[in-house]
Amino acid sequence: AEAPRLGDPAPVLSAVKTGTVLDALSDEMAGIPLGIVIVLAGNPGVGKSTLALLVADGWASGGGRSSTIWTWEEDTGRILARAQRAGIANRDVRIFERWPLLRSVRPRELWVLDSVQRAEIPSVRSDLDSQAHAIEVAALMRQARSRGDVGAVLLLSHATKEGDVAGVNALKHDVDAVLILHRAMSGVYPGIPAGHVLQCEKNRFGPMFSLPVAWPMEMR
Image 1 (spheres, rainbow, N blue to C red):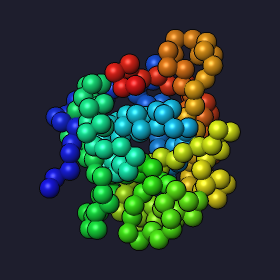
Image 2 (cartoon, rainbow, N blue to C red):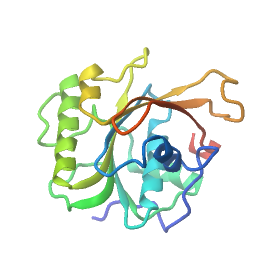
Image 3 (cartoon, rainbow, N blue to C red):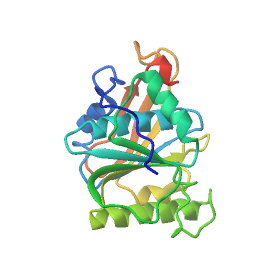
Image 4 (cartoon, one colour):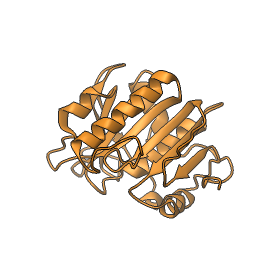
């Protein structure tokens, strides 16, 4: 059966005050180059899946690009409902709850894995939620990148209360960029009601940065 899609083509949703999430990240990360593998980490409930949905929509709105979201953390119905409430309806974004055994090569596609700790991929033998599992999945994504099977990869990861990426330094060394999404104290960024900040702790293609992020109430 065909994977769920987000509906008919629609404009990219503005989620950052100065533009879209993807535009803002592109400015900070030298255009989000093809072949990049990114970890997006944060505490449970901070909004990683919402931010990833916005990035997937922005990527797929570029000419000749598409996005696929694999979710093991929540069902497709919840993702579709969140997208519909926010007016995101991009048919170039697909959603799966199961990793397919056979995949077509899409060299300009963004893969979103939610999450790297719970990704059930047959070739990955380590226990779910383990550090070894996250490292194996990241290695598999690097191999796909090296073969040219995919345009870019966004791996969602849990973080500890101290803000450390689950999988600790080992996972950080195996990807090109590490982004941490966290809630900022009230008033730190005037005009940003959500109080979220996206902090870059590693960027192989550019400098570190901190970026205030907001999204519509409908997506929270």
